Length: 231
Image (cartoon, rainbow, N blue to C red; front, side, top):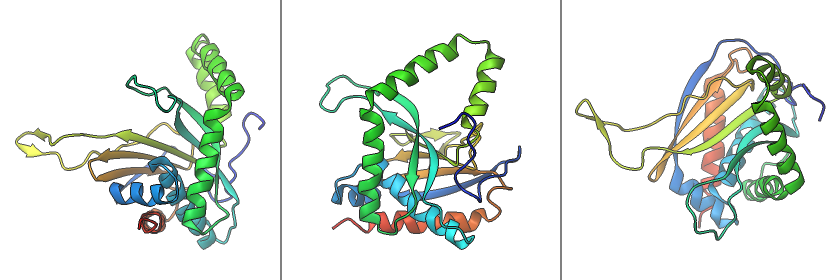
């Protein structure tokens, strides 16, 4: 795609310096079970839930949008390896928004993410671009990044949250909501897992998302439908 291509969503076109943070708590175990029931992973279920919610949110605004340009972290660590840790690279993919069937969407989202992980030529090129960018003056690399990422509709991240019970100031920490900032997309999400549940931090640009409460409700519907795939 050309450098600086605009967002695919007609709703998420405008940008401002303002940010709104919303929080969702989801049943992580249910999301995992639902995705696995049709051969997917948690990430596939996360993508499918957002696909369902954002499709309906766009339709509520009077638009049929086939896909959104989405930045997402992809783990390149081969399956079956014994060493710990992840080899993560941020990639840009097209999240399908042309389907209302959660089972079908989990499978399609898996195909999209696998295509990115297995495209060695594209990953090699991204590595070279990243290496070159690290050698450029900071202001130059920032300007190039802004130009290349200005067309993002959505940013998605899935990170490990607090794995054990923790306390601070004699009070137990009950959640760890991510606060995604610095993105040029209309909506950016960080899912932080903690046991059987997960906290979603959702930042949106108010001029791109004038009805964030309604967007959250549509996303809750998407997660519920993916979770309902579990037997």
